Length: 129
Image (tube, rainbow, N blue to C red; front, side, top):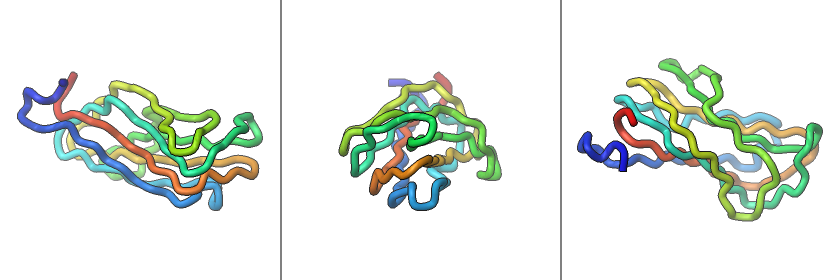
């Protein structure tokens, strides 16, 4: 597995949001990486199903490179589309963060949707792959 040779284990970071649709947009910091880390997988799990996905009714989750200040908004990966109850929507990536950079997640809602409690997850490994 990538990163094991550095002597550091893979790292999983999670963050929860309680029905992000209530605020239309919710942003959370997930992790600040102390050394170079590579994000290899991201996913989102929601409590309720979202069966409609179009330009006027949707829920999107954007994993962002927050930079060293935590306020950056550059997209790493976007996850959207209908959701199934407690079933992860995943997006594999290979994104390297330099030391002392943040990973953020933004939940963005349009229309009238309710996905209930949602959890965003980042799987990362130390080092460069």
